[in-house]
Image (cartoon, rainbow, N blue to C red; front, side, top):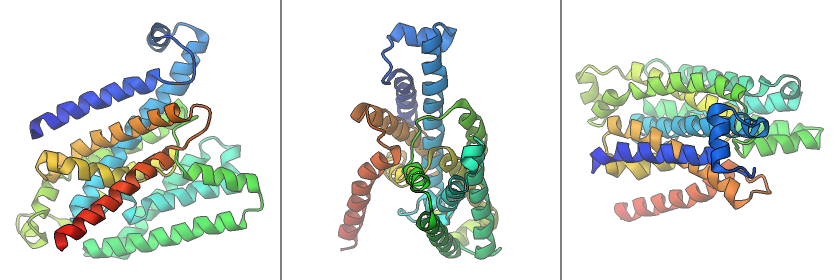
Length: 328
């Protein structure tokens, strides 16, 4: 069964990626869409396929993969099934950076100001978390530092909204924080994907270390595993992958929490197998959710983060209920 998981996920992601390219409000035939995408035939069709749908599909693939992979890595390192990428404060600080760019008007003056500010916020989060956790800080120190930073960044975002003199700017901030892949361009792809690829590559190298960590920290260290190095790789990889995702897509929640839980039993609960499976699973979930928002409300701008929260929150409650029954 576990051998079939990766091929099935790969085929699912490929099918959803193609569907994301072909589904949309523009009334284009299948042949017309393929000709525009591959051969560049038809000015209007080329604009729709290459400037609107292709960036959206590529970002869905990259953002979903980053969130799923980061969630699996975080749960494996902390050995906590409730851990998710935002636990170390990356999502909150990246959102705060983007909110400041919107509030100060930098986002309107410079196209890339918003994602660059979000990336800067994510990088600052990684540095602060590592500094607060200390060189020998364990999982608990990392969690506490991340929670404190998340709370501080959340308070900063609320303060910006509270003091915003412009209701239109406040509305723009709120809508951005709901998460969306709409109206993204290849410029956003070029900015985010390199960080996601580098961060994801770092996280994928953690597989053997996380396998050893399942035996306990003392046993893992006796096997030659450096927990300090593993923590550094986790923080740097998550900061780059999730920070870049938040920078271009806003807050898309529950993907990093739900996907590893669904796939863990299918891969034998081994972190080294769960990491690539969660990367593909996350990509499939975000692509499917982005297709769903276009089909459910084609005339309304239904936000991607809203849909993932509607689906993910009940799963989270089910997880808590199941854990309570096991403990009882």
